[in-house]
Amino acid sequence: MTSPPPGVPAREPGPPRWRVHREFAHTLVGLLLGILSFVYAVVAISVGAGLAATVVGLPLLAALIVGARRLGEVNRRLAVGLLHARVPAPRPFRPRRPGASGWIRAGLGDTVGWRALAYLLLKFPLSLVSGIVSITLWGYALGAVTYAVWRPSLPLQHDGDGQGHRGASFGTDYFLDTAPLIVGVTVTGLLMLPVARWTVRGLVQLDVLLSRGLLGPTRRSLTAQRVRDLERTRAAAVDDSAAALRRIERDLHDGAQVRLVAMAMNLGIAREHLAADGDAVDLETTRTLVDAAHRDVKEVLVELRNIARGIHPPILDRGLGAALVSLTASSALPVRVNVDLPDRPSAAIETIAYCCVAELLANAAQHSHAGEAHVSIVGRARRVRVVVGDDGAGGARVDPGGDGGLAGLVERVRTVDGWLAVTSPSGGPTAVTVDLPLHA
Image (cartoon, rainbow, N blue to C red; front, side, top):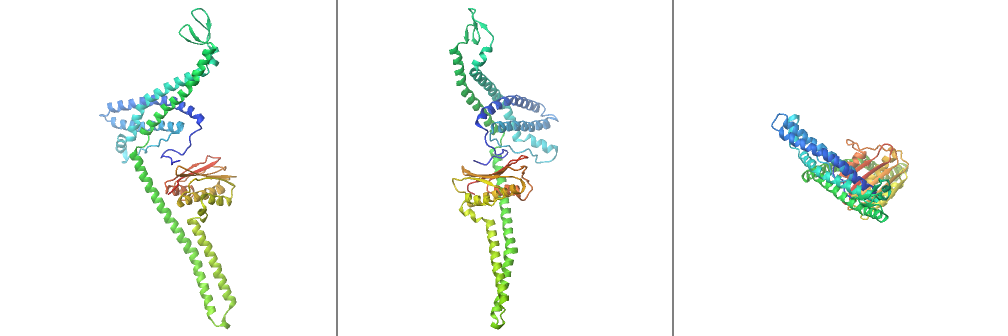
């Protein structure tokens, strides 16, 4: 269980029973795309090379290279959509300089476009072989398996002796129309089914490998993107820590400090009253001052406890599972909890997961009009995946410009190299997935 690469949504493979269908559909659609891709690549190379010395040659070649990028994206999305392959999206096309000259220069030097052009050339022979082999193998296998069903509908044929036969023929005198031969054809078809399945799967995987190598980002671009992500998450972590410190400082200054000052003043006045002569002591006033100081002490303790709970909920000392059970017990919605954590996460990860669940359950109770919610936390492969869902109205979205809510959770999980994905179609249901490392 790892974080999805850039440009690929977090998704699970489809049902195994549909995998064969999706692979066969990929070979058929891929055959059509392969022909189109090959024609485009040949035209782009020949026209670009032939007109390179003219005025329109370089702009046209730049446009064709950028167009190859777009056609490569269609092939990449086909692999992701039908095969659920992990093929990350390459970096977008962004000219560094404004104007037409900047666009032309960026197009001519676009390595993603050139690599896509190479893919379009190599796609044609691979898709041609895949399409022909897939159609042939599956056609013969399924035809042989169902031979006993469609054989009676074949036209009547006669051999050299004039005898009539109704079945597939080899030459002019050999017909597959006897019971042993029909059974043999059916058994042969059954044996061909796994051959067709695994042959097509192997050809499809070759296309996936070609897509990853030429349509996905290079190792250099992935490294650069990783550096940018780390810089952004580091800045977000610094901002989050600064905001937390400001909040703690404000709570201490405006709350606990004010009450401690009031308590000190009340105790000082009470001490002055007690220091006076016995006959001059106002017991009622002194009692009132002591009671006020005692009340301030209790309120300060409550505020300090709340501040400490905001930094690290004490219930997490008992583990994330116990903390979530306690949290959901006080939720406004009935919540089903499933916790499967063979290894305990680090304290920072537990705190982030707990705060995410608390925020998401609060959002579900306040905005979704849900009748029930569920929380699932599973730890596998040194990752922790948290899923919080409800049966509400849906429509939840991440506002990139927002400071709180889901946008705040996205920034928070990114600080530990995690990710958050929202699935919330209109009408519901809603499911928010948070993926975190086991140890920060």
